[in-house]
Length: 403
Image 1 (spheres, rainbow, N blue to C red):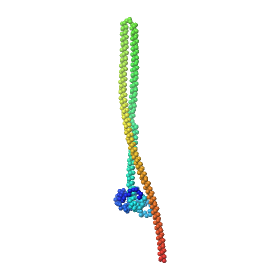
Image 2 (image 1 turned 180 degrees about the vertical axis):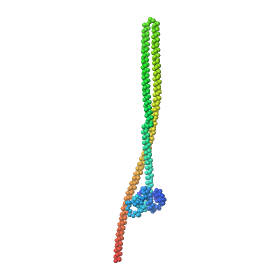
Image 3 (image 1 turned 90 degrees about the horizontal axis):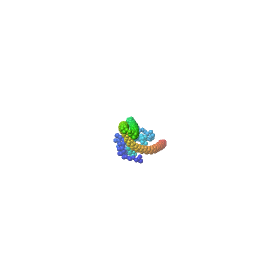
Image 4 (image 1 turned 120 degrees about the horizontal axis):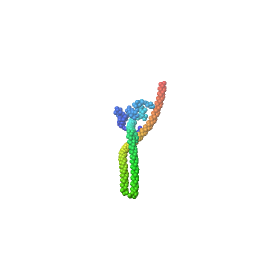
């Protein structure tokens, strides 16, 4: 115990620590300095060691009164009240109780070990609490991460309650586009056919007008030729000319009237076609506006979905960052726990080595004590033999003197 590194307390400090940490109630109040120094009382030390073993090892009271099976002691009544401790603490010897300095060092070691044990327990419980809280937080973050992934999946797929509306909108837009295209195509074809028909009619009428002009020119030539031939009766010629003029005028008037009627009818049809075209254009504009509003709604919904996706992704990234920080913290806590476990294992190994050394010392002392007892027995036998010889010699001398 001279090589131990723990601080050694004086007797007053030992009494204070024992009252605060080991003994409780009336036992702690009745403890005084004279119970430990200069002459330690065995019953007080017995009580202190019992309480220390109960605190540290959790030993039941009946174990303090059980005789160890492997103990071979010549005079067990001399170690009454102390011998059961050798079953629990193998390096405890009788000299530790009899000497005050050894007792104070031993009690200082017990007090320091209790302090060290409490500090290690507090540190371990703190690490355990941090680990549990980190594990709970990790589970919460994993649950939030899974929930965010499920939300992303729901966002990628159209919701069930909106699928019908979305399908109706898309079908309506497609039908509207198809109907607009078909109406526009049909109206364009009708207008083109009407224009081509009108052009063909105008070309035919122009052709007929040219034919009429040619016929008028030919009639004029005939008239000139007839003028040269008809010279005898100017009155007949005059009447004939007037008749010809009337017929020509009538023909011209009839032709012009028919052409004007036809042109008016064509213009009225053209106006009707233009009004129909304007109405179709207005209808097409209205349908395009409806299509634009529907497209705007769809674009707005897509933008809202994209914005919601971005916010969810940002939240997921934040959760991932927090998860990484918690994971690093848990990793550091696990590393510290491993270090503490390694230190505890090293302390256990050192205690095991000390235990082996103490067992070796105990065995050496036991063999030496056995040799000492054998020597005492041999000396007693020799002394008994010498006493018997002297007694026999004295008896012989007394017998000779009597004879």
